[in-house]
Image (cartoon, rainbow, N blue to C red; front, side, top):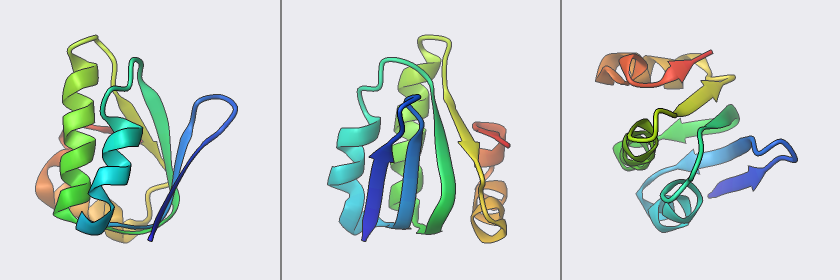
Length: 94
C-alpha cells in the first residue's frame, strides 16, 4: 500500500510500496503538477519500474516548464535503483 500526503509547504511524502498496484493513485498526485515539488522518500520501502515511470512522466512535464522534482531522504536501496537505472541523472536527489 502506498500513502501519498502533502505537507503545508507543498512537499509530497511517500510511505509504503510504490508499485504497479498504486499507479492510478500516484498518477493523480504527480501527473498534472503545475510546479516543481520536493518529494520525501523517508518512509518509502520499495519502488518498482511502474513507480519510476510515474515519477519520470511527472519530471518530463515539469522540465518543460523549467522545473522538476527534488527527492529527499532516499534510502540506500532505492538510491541504488535510481543509480542503476540512470535516474539519478534525471532527478535531483539530496
